[in-house]
Image (cartoon, rainbow, N blue to C red; front, side):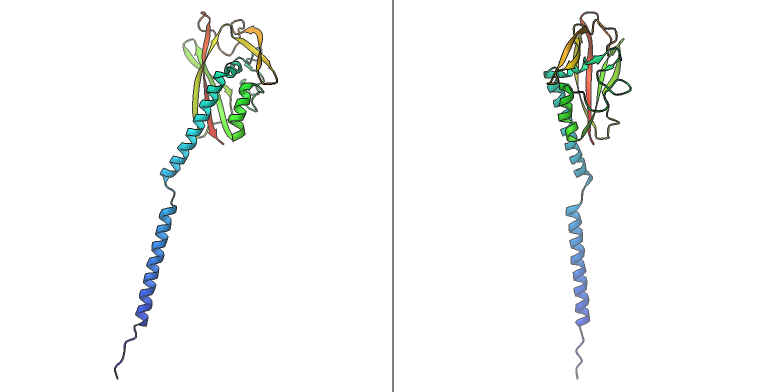
Length: 205
């Protein structure tokens, strides 16, 4: 009588090996298509930063065009040596922006969209730059971006007070050339009082 070898055990073993290889290949494939690489994260972050920078540039361009940025710089309380309605220890705004045209633009562009911002004003003092806070919302994140513009202040520029219902400030009879305690010093004596660089630093909260 001839004995036929039982190959069922070998077949089961081969099937198990094949199934294991298929499962392993599936796992490797899934990991490859779902992996998040540092490059993809960097691209996303750069896109957000570009959007924030564009927003900051847009705010500066629009407020320079309608004059509200310059009026906000001249919305100054010389007796306190501080921006009018400011609530910070250094005369800067820390809470909500003042209810003026420039403040409303900031709220619409940044506050309502969950974007934090600081605004700095740099001007010349005896040939050296001095920087002062206009708005301060805390330490910027690592992904903060900035935009800046310049504003020319002349001797005849009036200080402002009392915004109307549209947030437009009304000029006072007092000019920066008449007061001895404005934000900046008179650096020329030729009608050009000073030139301010306004920098907006923005970041996502």
